[in-house]
Length: 144
Image 1 (tube, rainbow, N blue to C red):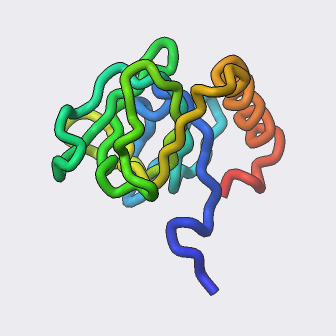
Image 2 (cartoon, rainbow, N blue to C red):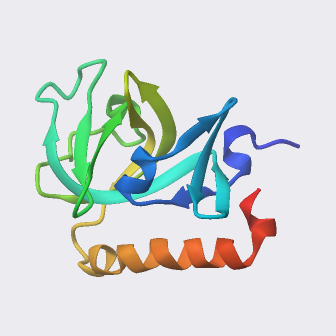
């Protein structure tokens, strides 16, 4: 039984990490010093700084800022539950696939959620990402 793209965990990454992913063959890869792991799906969080005005637009997209870098999230018109809730200033999470568009990487959303109601999400995010990187570095078998 294969879970396809969902057979691997979504990797928690900062926007800067997403923008620096390397595409090796047909695989996205995170590299830092002598440490690396494959990335099938990503989990990112940030504040909505802009979004397409027409929420029914085929190429509806959102720009997130995680406190230092911005990433573009596409495919927002197809997320479960719709996108009518998305507003500037919200703190949101997105799970999605990396896509190369021109010279940059975007996240093609599979799922999004508003995390604005609890400030813990935003205040712990950088620590969550650092912790998972440390765990992966110490346990290379988890990097596959």
